[in-house]
Image (cartoon, rainbow over all chains, first blue to last red; front, side, top):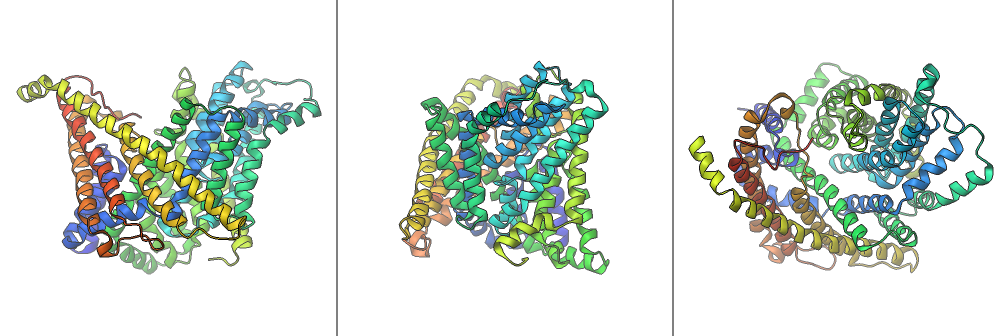
Length: 438
Length: 183
């Protein structure tokens, strides 16, 4: 059997292992090891040990636990409440203001946590009771939170962009900058989606505030959110201004959030334990998946399948745009049943050589792929964010939630089209900061 | 399977104790991981402070950061295993009941435990070479060996947990699996 045949068998075996619920990281490890053993038996132990240790001790991956620590500290310090109330004080008079405030607060919180699940869970706890108190339709309320939470996967510091950067060997700082404008664009599109839903059916979002919030109250609410805004400005602004590398920004951000949590008297033994546990749990997920992915990547490299696929794509005369479109469609389908991390690590090593051979900008593609994965986070049947929100609102049927995400899902399609038509949305900031286009 | 499940059922208490022991080991990893996380944060912040405020560099900082990260990663993998945070694709539970998943889960745990154990062995074997093979950090020559061992121990703990869950799954063959993967 030639390399391509072995790779095909490997993919089928991987699919079978995933179906029987082998953890994604270990499934890739099993197939990778078996495949390497079939092609070059002597390489198994060095690859297994070498890749495992290389992933665990890769300096750029320091970002992951530090940003996760920052997000978890932000959760226990109660900063999310302040962010939500500040957003609501400014948007209060609009119809659908509570849903819009949830989305804006999710966007702000995403700039601290890098995790869509953390954003959806935290904001769900804060804003869902408010929306239900004012008689918001369940589908709009839960849809806004689930969709708002997905912004955590795109707005820097995004765990998705970190994983993508590690796998494709792209600059994480450049990817963070690339995600910023599309993240803000998506936030605006989500707000527009709320506006359209409420305009079509005003009964879905009764007015929460009938008189304008006084300027003084708005300023006070904004001042309370200064901690979170300040930390975001220092970390993301620091990366943009070239003051910090992404790793340094993660450490400074985590330290500032720790100081903020201490200043708000949110740090006690129980809270610290909870923060450490949550950080380790989230980091463990990422490290095991990456460990498996890198062993699997070596296996794919040995089969030469990526080269064969790239040659085939070239011989068919596909353009870069057509190939990207095809990959995105496949990702949208995969997103309906695969975890976002799993999708990234399973498919990107295969498609990267193909897209690079067609001259696709991998920074721009990273943003496109992350938006597509965000769509998977709210797509039936396994949209993870939906299940997170279900945990906060157990009495709302899943079908109602999935109905509620439709306008936001369409907003994501619009974002994809806009970033595809205007690649500058993703490349402008990284090029302005780092120069060049590569 | 009845006789065999009876064999496992009678030993359920022992398997539960084994799982609990693995869970406690993962808890110990979490303590070590918490300390390593604090070191990682402290060293990285110190590096930033030295570079931007004191206009100097801490030569050892990156070496210490990467080795702390290795400990954090090891602890995170072991602790994540106990907390069920290693993602799996849970589609089968939507289309098949326990009658099917008890077979597939047993196979999945067996394969996963074997993979984690093989990785642990590879890390112990390959990592034992240490400085004589040039396996040291680039600046201050910290030996990689103890960090290979930490990662190997974490994967061995994960393998042991999976093995105990496999046995517990066999012991509860005709009932509910206490370690049913969550949605």
